Structures are given as structure tokens and as C-alpha cells.
Length: 323
Image 1 (cartoon, rainbow, N blue to C red):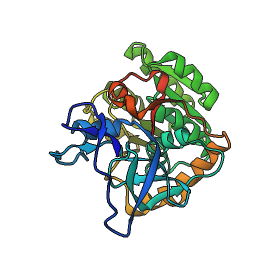
Image 2: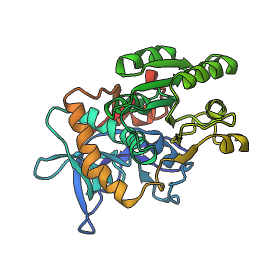
Image 3: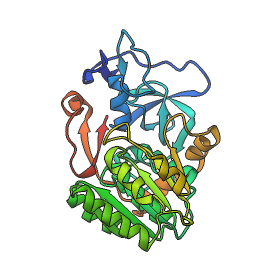
């Protein structure tokens, strides 16, 4: 079969021949792949830099961790891959498979699951979002952040504050449900003062953070109390696009009712992952099929994978490979 193969970690995948996977246990099933999104997770695994990366395979490996495929009986499904998914055929897990509703195309469906996991799992399980709460999404101009805005609104957030550097995309988030935008292109002093004013007007209940680094430090300093009673704030980190480490004053932890946690592979319980596949993904696919959730994608043919693997995708779009 044809596939996108990384021959050596750190190199871009090449469109070449690769052995077709073989079903070896009852939890695996072979699908004909139709569409796969290229995510930061897949890029991290391909480069060997992600913490979930496997040991290097001397024969190379097919990239892609999930995708949209068709079963032998013609049923369209989203599924997690046992084998790499950017290929003509992929071995996927029966227990992590979702039948797609009518009205959603393959590319849209392929683009959503990674972003859903990167937003819903944090909002629902780490932040325990309740209707009427104020949510700050730090780094909302990326693909996952854009989806997080819509899902926070769907879950009943009363006010959504968003930050980001792409000012054009920031403005567009107002149409998706954001109430207030703060540009990270400003000086730290201006960012701090805007965040502080917003927090004083409507205390921030939840922070969904895709950036970490200096902007996370600013947000945490805004939350710092002065000895009075403070509302509880749940700060959930999901990404580290602005740096992997921060400086955190112990005074912040002592002066505010702060829950600091992360959401990602390894942090979720088995029950939470089961709910992702049995309830959350089916619900979100259905919302997209009704145009309630909107995604911004760009498609590329699998034959162009090497050229497009590291291409800049503008305005928070998700690049989807069509097989």
C-alpha cells in the first residue's frame, strides 16, 4: 500500500510503499482511510520529541494517530490507529471507534477529534465547567482554541475572554462566542492591566491555557490575592507553545483558591477516555453536522505529504490529508 512513512525520526514523512497492516487480535479492524488531520501531536511523535514517542523503528513507521475510514461494510467511522493512519489502509481499535453521522464530511470529521480532546477533556473533567462561569482561553487563535471557544459557549459559559497574537483571528472569535479579546502583541503592562480589569469585573473561574510561558505567568500574577477571600479558579494547561517552564511565586499559591492541573495523554482516567469515545465525540460530530460547531480546515493530497508536512497553515486552520 501507499503511505506517509518516516524513515528516520526528525525527517519529514515520504509518500512511499509500506507493508499493509495485519489484524492480529479481536480489538483490531482494518479500514480504508479517507482523511487524517496533521496535528502537533503527530509532528511531535514523528520527530521523537513528544513524551509519548515510541523507540525508533529501523524499518520506518507510518505517521498519523487517528483518522476517518470506511469499514468493509461501508460504514464511515472515526477511529484511533493501532498502526499509522496516513496510508491507504490502517489498523484501528474497535473500542476507540465512533460511527459518523450524516451531514459531516470526511475532512471536517478528521480535523475535530484532537481538538475536542484538547478542549472538552479540560473543560469538562479538569475544570468541571458550570453554566454561568467566566472562562479565559489563553492562546485561542489556534485551531483547538477556536473550537474551545465554541464548546465553552455550548457548555454555558457566561463570559469568554480570549488571548492570542493573530489579531485578525482574535476578531473572528467574537463571531464564535468570545466576549472579550486581549492581544498578546501588546506590552506585558497593558496585557496585565486588561486582564486585571476583566478579572475584577467578572472573576475568572476557569483558565484554559494553550501557551504556558510568559503569558501564563501574567495570568497567574493577575489571579494573585491580597489577603481577602478569593473565588476558586481552575487553571488547566494543555500546551506549551510559548515555552515549557514558568516562574511561579509561592505567594500566588497561598493567596488565591487556585487549582492548577494539566490535561493531556496520560492525565486522563480510563473512564474519562471511555466517555470521550462513547459520548463526547458522537455529540461533537453531531453538532458539527448541524453547523453548530464550525472548523477552519485546509486539505492536501497524501502524495504531497513531504512538501506540506512542515508548511505554515495560516489563521489557525487544521491541515487535513485526503487519501
